[in-house]
Length: 160
Image 1 (cartoon, rainbow, N blue to C red):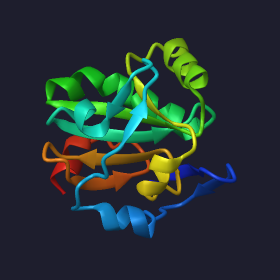
Image 2 (image 1 turned 180 degrees about the vertical axis):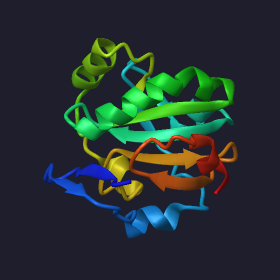
Image 3 (image 1 turned 45 degrees about the vertical axis):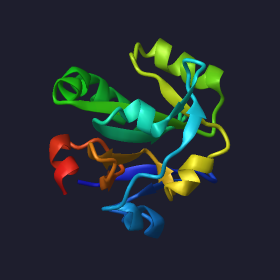
Image 4 (image 1 turned 90 degrees about the vertical axis):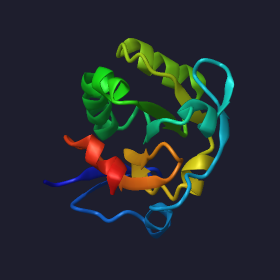
């Protein structure tokens, strides 16, 4: 299957089976970098608070990204199953403000809150070179897998 994603800057499209960046790849098997950001709910929250000891899909996205829209649609379809299986979906909006991210989530009826990485500082810490980017983090906070699309067998990504 061809994977497609959008570069954060300069908003260019790329296609093909692209490898994760060197920084992304170096994070697999290591603790997810901790951060604290404002959310679309208007509160400051850390990654560990949001994860709350559960497995998590940390999803970097933006409202202008068509491949993010597709991934969010897939996540939305699986959201109840994801929650029932003891995992959380943690969104990180890249480069946009609270109003843009919140409006998108509300207009698409997505019952999720997003972290706001307006200056892409956290995306930089995670080595994100394009979006969508999904980090699969186990219950101990270790990054197990990094993908650029939502997989049909997402549970397998937590055990890699």
